Image (cartoon, rainbow, N blue to C red):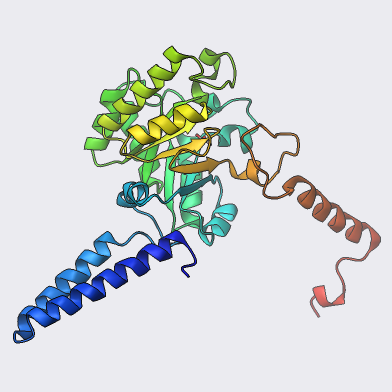
Length: 319
Ligand code: KIV
């Protein structure tokens, strides 16, 4: 019984390869040189077809392969070196250095405060901690709206900091620049629905695409970002039926957050899923840990040990 869908697929490939090798061996049994050449070609093809093994580093080609194979993509945000070191050992497929770090790590009230310099610093820290993960660098507020040169400099900064691609919020008015970035050899992940950099224009963090016109606009934008060459699309806070329909229409994978189960993958903010803010519990969020209380209890335990003289003990001191 395969332990995961990925392993199941690898086993299937191995079975197919074995069958093919047997057939080839039978056909060219009298021609060992030819056999070696064919075996070599088969092995190369198998490697190209083989999906990333669970826990291995994804590359850009794996995203669409995952969608075709019906395998979901897991993504979480990651902003710093120490959590990147832990996530590097996890089974997560990919890490997003999201501009949400302006709120989570820097305490701002929205993502509009993220800058290119701030993003590049965090991408570099995550890359140092997670050398084995596909890292997505989020293009911050207005960074693709100031003209070609500043946009390309921002892309360069995130890629040189260690990103494997960039993520860009929105579509209207920036499809040409998105296509240019793709043509420049930088993979682009799009982001539609509730795009938090436009929070002021939305009048708050609200579910998008609820009425027919708004839903049609998101469907249209989704098709346009795919046509512009984006390799994946984040869909944030849209009705699940809409997300499912877009995911069925596009050939590129969709990664949902607050978009239901019909997308090709899911993303959550790490601190949210770990329950670091006990009071933050939007409908779409699942807590996988009571991080707030676990951390608080640990720190209070330490405080108690220090103040009671229980820490350090003899074994924790140098002779
Ligand atoms: O910045 C971010 O964390 C994001 C995700 C919520 C998709 O864009």
